[in-house]
Image (cartoon, rainbow, N blue to C red; front, side, top):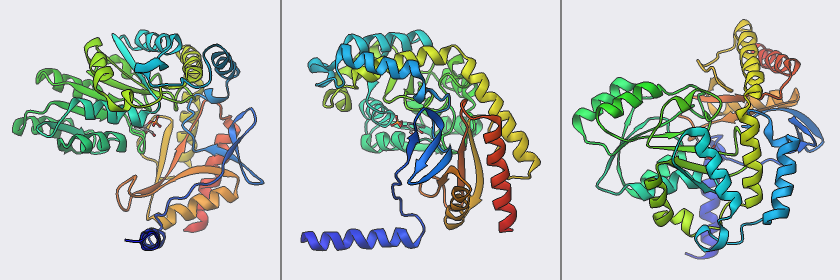
Length: 380
Ligand SMILES: Cc1ncc(COP(=O)(O)O)c(C=O)c1O
């Protein structure tokens, strides 16, 4: 195939996605200086209800100062993979702080949560293994399992009884779930899944990307837990926490860890300070207040909420083109929300993904609900 033919093929594929309203494209969105809740789209300033900066730490002065201090002390980049010379005191100290927060023996840092999840699952499992997983686990877990060629058995979302039934017909090596589901915002029945796993002496692996320090996910001690720094901590990077044996195994076997430049040490110092700020708990109270206010106002306005009590508040719409239409209407009213379509969510379950932050004011939340209600009412 010539380069021209390959480009034609690519264009045909793009055209199909375009026709289905599923073509993904980037938009330039730059945060407005020092305002965690505002974002610029060209000339327009939008109120941002689409980021995962749940505690608003990405703009915290202490975190930005720590990033600068970290860069001065350790350099901006780690300059090498961890096993060569990219593992510094900044990395070690962040790992220790994460272990203190979770009560785990050891932690291992990665440049992203995606890399950490795939690294963990690819390193642990192989084609002879059976793994049980919630139907809605994240793409990074799916990819890790696919790469490992495991036999994946999925149970309906959050259905512990169905998970228990799968134990009757298989001997799984692990059970996988998210703590807070990224597209639905609901919380996994972690205590029940944990007891099921204990009953069968089976490891539980929890993707805590959206739950860490936001809900009570630390009440259980899974075999392995993914923590991301790009959400609650407003930074970048991720960690797997677990036993010393698990972490030593990943250091020696994870290709993502061994063959990749280590996470920036400056980012580690910033994430360490963000962790300390998040652990104080006062920002979570502000966030809870906004979640409560949003749900109260949205319920009163008759909006079709999903049963989520977290910062992720989806509004189910259905078909992809309608999701885009509603999101566009909101943008025209100065509001940015996530327009989530297949394959990120199942066909016909396109939705607005609204994310709340501790930094939103009550007036901003009120403005959001009023705008959504206006668009919904105008459309019916
Ligand atoms: C549930 C879940 N796990 C893992 C990841 C990947 O984390 P990161 O963004 O740090 O790559 C995401 C990212 O959105 C996520 O939502």
